[in-house]
Length: 187
Length: 282
Picture 1: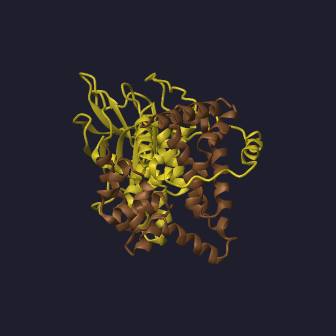
Picture 2: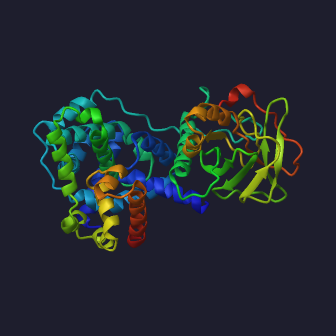
């Protein structure tokens, strides 16, 4: 962990504690520290800028609401904040009603853009230069691709199986075994 | 913790962190996380390990006025209270209270039990590779801290299996036995003294026709009985018989007390009123 990461973690811990105590400046602090990166994650999953902003706003409201509960648990503030955002993005992505106002062309564009996120040749850009990238490199191609499609592009089991042309059970098994290998490599 | 149970929980944690659960499943799993620090730490570790994938997204400047708009929204958004962990009475003479009753002291405990059983049911429902026969009802025994201690699987043919999912300390001179309460009229019936806190097959009098809170004493005092028909069992009945099957299995369930007492002939505490014994309707 670099000094910068450590300092960010401390600041986020402080910000989340502030939220838990009902102080709105905690929300401003989270936005200052992680806002642009969070918006980038949301845009990568949702493709459309308007949906990404909506997801970030919803996620920040959820963080405000649930901060006190989270502070009682374990785990890093940063990991939790990103998890709340990702979950909010996935909810929007899988809410048929929410996307029904988009044209079929627009929906296709979203799907294709998500698929393009995890092209075989540039997956290393997604994992960065750390240990995670090294460990992803040790996985079978299908397992690595399935994990990246799920985590980076927000694909469901069903979407992965359809896109990769394999039965649902195979897609699940890729992810399960892939994550088990990943855990072992990272530990 | 048994490896099968551990595998299930690990798999659910994977799905949760990867965003592969439905919103309902995720919400229930969150209830489980909230009550289990070890699981919470496991989830947090996996999240942190995968965080570089999020940090590789290209950052985008927030639009002008975003922070101000957000502040206006949260100014009108009440915060959820932190969960209050009221300790349940550990007095062994106090009859356990079904946690899904309106007067239950900890409503989340029902959610926790439901989520754990849901998890198990999903595990059984989704795992085609698991050998038959599948249990018809799965009951999870929680201690008064809300931690799962044992799982009872009812195979619907008057046999059941008990597995312990965490260490149970049996004091010297005490034994463990499982009890069932078929009905208030019949009274509690022993399913036999167990050979310590390890997996065992249970067979004996008919499994109860109505669920009952456990009749227990210290040192281990299961508070809550939860059960649910695994999805796979539902489907195997065919659509025509499904409702009947569900009704029947819901009315079974809830054996399940395990207590430290060397006398297998009588259950020393009177059964609580049957009205307190409705199963959790999940």
